[in-house]
Image 1 (cartoon, rainbow, N blue to C red):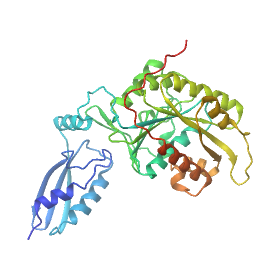
Image 2 (cartoon, helix red, strand yellow):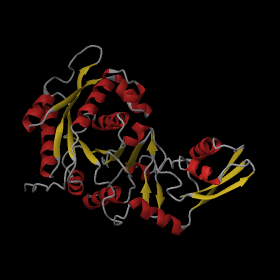
Image 3 (spheres, one colour):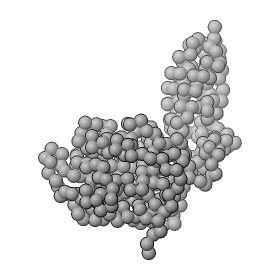
Image 4 (cartoon, rainbow, N blue to C red):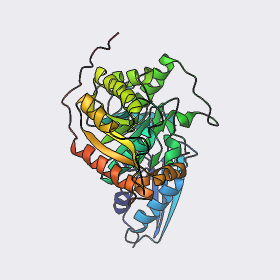
Length: 362
């Protein structure tokens, strides 16, 4: 006796689109199911013809449909959605929200990782914080808002470009982490030479046209300093919480204070300070002095959430495109970052409305 069609359709509910993170049945991607004795042929309609993740569909369909009673063989064919089907899919993914509204779910927590100056390890910290939060069971996305100094795709080892479905941008996914960066749209490490209005438009597009889906937390890698991007993000994400990164020396701490003040002026809640490169692993030597993180926290009236050591494992992992919390989970840096993630998760609050931004001085 051949397999039951309803049982096959039920099995297809377990086949998840690797980018949209939703069942193919829910997304109306199952075009056809043919049954001939124990042989089952499934056709799935992809959003784009050259989908780079076909192998994931192949493996999932073989696993779930192949486990249905009576199935002896499974074949998977692909088709491409029509423009009308893509438009219907986009409307479903937006959940009824207007096309040019912020696409984040209202319950998504936004954590802006900021610094006063470059070179303090802000981006590597943002990557590892996101990975650590995912390791705690959260659904996490990363927005690389450091437009001029974008580096997150390299640190996560992602070279796959986003897919566009009827004007909606679907971000690449790595181990459950969704990522969007201006780096995906540039050729050969080209520089970004834009003025303020273009930067604002790009960030607005990343927040309105990108399908972030159901996220618990969006980690934003902010550019260093207090320029156009920081102001724009404060306007676009008035409920964001700021995590301010500094190194121990006074010069970095004093500049980090400005980044914290900018966050407050744009209506962000100051979550806390993080002191990076606090001591050299293996020696305990305080290469960059001491006390900067605590001074920053005290001056801004926020807690010092973590001191992260200067650990070669963190640098090596970033160069290899793997977060150190995954590649070297027992390293001193990884343990400190996981502790930071646990502290951040414990401080989660769900605001009951938008926070009004304070007026900028001058």
